[in-house]
Image (cartoon, rainbow over all chains, first blue to last red; front, side, top):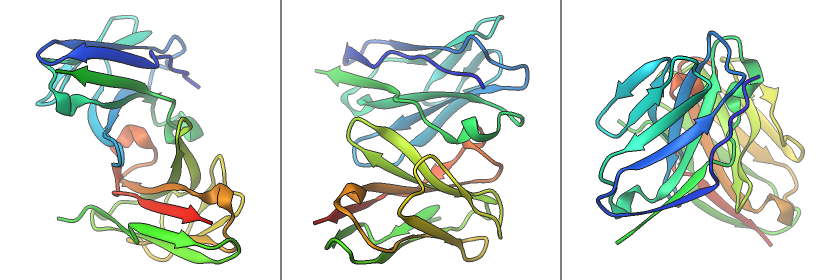
Length: 112
Length: 114
């Protein structure tokens, strides 16, 4: 079961790029890396998923090095509305119960 | 395009009362989940249903029961509410099993037990 480690909190200012790194040393061959975002008073929202190299969508980019033991969620030019908790999850078809659980996530606070 | 709908959004119960939290999804998803979120505790899985007709316990099932009424609906019942069950409850669904298959969450039910 891949375990993830990410910073508890991060601070940034509007307009900056924010990179949140997640460590997952025991990632399995079939595991994907998935990030969720949770705004205050709302349910989590899927934002991006990747297996290797780089994935980009309209919200974020996900960088995964060749060894896949870590990944970095990149938020370009953050705004106040990006203040949220970001969860990194690792799992795949054979991960079973671990794919149903959230860690504590990273609380990102964006200030003016 | 409602996604995952939870009712009610807010509820206040007295200790010992019972209630059912309703959840419905319109995405034809196979799997559904109930989580609770307490301050500083993150989201904890209460029960899940991998497919219609099946339910399984999660991390914190004590004091709760669930029913997968059909493919669309997954309800959570508190038989005798306790103050420790004061929390925000989230229902979620996904096509496959697990959060790595893009789960969709409802807006939550804020429950206070006094």
